[in-house]
Length: 168
Image (tube, rainbow, N blue to C red; front, side, top):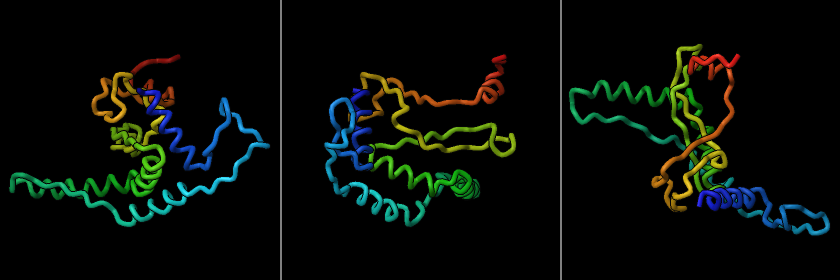
């Protein structure tokens, strides 16, 4: 199941890039070139500006009237995090990924190395190809996955500071 998800993600992105036909074993032969009118990339590239024309409205609401001032503070914090994380650009990129691969993932985490070592909430767009999904997960719903891991490269210095390990 996990492999078929990734194969579909790759296939959707290949269509977007104009690679509609593949020969055996993924090799391309110059004498077998096929002219392709890539309607997919035009549609995706047209949809993204329409969807990102205006910013989404994020608003914190309090259930208790006594917490209204706190909710307003949360509103300004949400706007601040949107700006600091350059979410306008990340949202456009996420829409491109989701329209070509069928899904997009964000990782929201605290990064202690941002803001001159003070730390900051960071929002990163993840590459779906780098996800390790439990094989028992149905193709239709990732919420039912037993586990979902993301693999990425990390700086050894950051790992040693974060976990207190000397990699010598």
